[in-house]
Length: 95
Length: 279
Image (cartoon, rainbow over all chains, first blue to last red):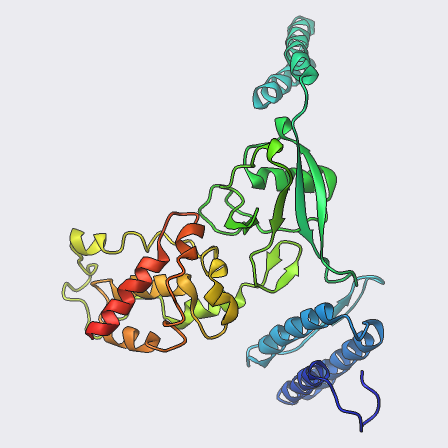
């Protein structure tokens, strides 16, 4: 992600941050243990991608933003209770 | 080619039976081989396909990959070639497909510059050069030939494509009656399979995909406006009487050219515009 607090963020960086904020806001509306689970998963995913993905790879970043927005819309609905992720490489699953 | 397969499978089955039928089956096998050999000595008809590939998990940019197919061993349609490539050459090729007969609309893609269904488009002649297969234009790509259709479906949902009535039906317990002439008015609109070939061929839809509804949604809007059983005609007309939703159409008529089912969305949009004038 961009350096520190002062420098101006690009449009794409702002989109990523607002998506992150959106996820955290939705997490607040769920139950406490689900909330901590969602927060840990989402922050881990965002931090991992910020290190792995090249800043100039706009195509991939936009793809991730679109995917994230769809997942956020699904999470927003009151029927969705929690989030879980599956780690394919090490075949570990957190529920 | 199918006949050879059938003969070979018949010869396999009796091989578990007693000796007399084994000899019989061997006779079948040699007959099949005898028939196959003259075909193999004929020159194979090789066709090159340039297919758009992009994997979101890899950091590389999208590219056109070339695949060679022997047309003698492949079905006549582009979908047969894609399935053959996926089975034999590159299993990572990703595309949508379902009915293989042009009724589901899943395999819509851009073949040699024209939008169409892969299962209905014949493979052009090998002598004409390589065939380029790309996803539907100006749509976000999820992977290879698979595009994101959510905006398209949301626009279809926004015109409320179901029957709406203010009063209960006159004949209680029975269906709402419709004369043959009224039913004929729906011909040319009900056949739409929502393949998105028309909308993605419209330049006006390329430049305003979020605000312009596109030919497919407008065709369905007219289908419900023209339905004699529907009682919300005025509200439906008012809902799309928007500068962006309807009037981005400039009768480019690419939609009529692209439709794989032979429908004319441009004509239906003109009917809607006429109705707007009179209401």
